[in-house]
Image (cartoon, rainbow, N blue to C red; front, side):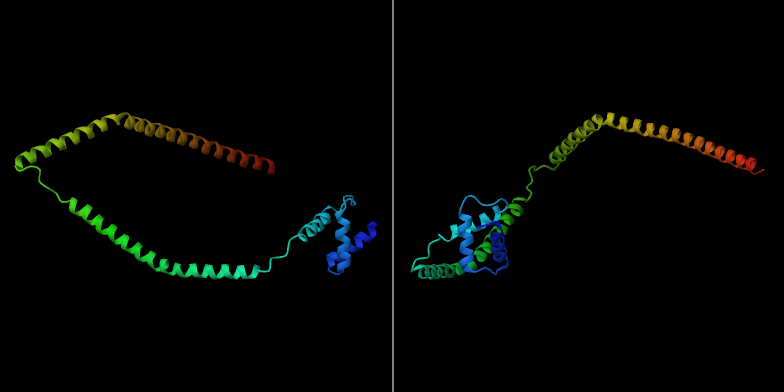
Length: 192
């Protein structure tokens, strides 16, 4: 087959105007190994058609087996309805059980009991615990004193920087005014 005829058949094929005989001719042509350059995509397409033609026909009882499978899945789905209603009920029961158990665990065990029978001993023990806590807090505050000093030094540094900035700003304002005055004087001298 020459290249002109090949182009014509491929164009008819892509336009959907080819006959079965022309398509068979194209399939046979692209089975061979030596095809012109630029027709690699068409070779892939027609080689796919050649390979897919080798797919066997389904067996005689194929349809019956599919229908039997559909029936079996519907039977299984029917037993799923029971699970569909049972799962939310069991979930609700488990939630109620957890809430009831947590109530008894937290509120019943949270009842306070007196550990001292003599109020004076209880007061003395409370004072002892409060002094220990106060001592620990004071120790923690002493450790943080260098941080407070650093904060104070940072504040003082920023204050001195602000003062320096204000001085520079005043000098720049003065310089700006001097430049403006000199421009005005130059303009007056050039206009005369």
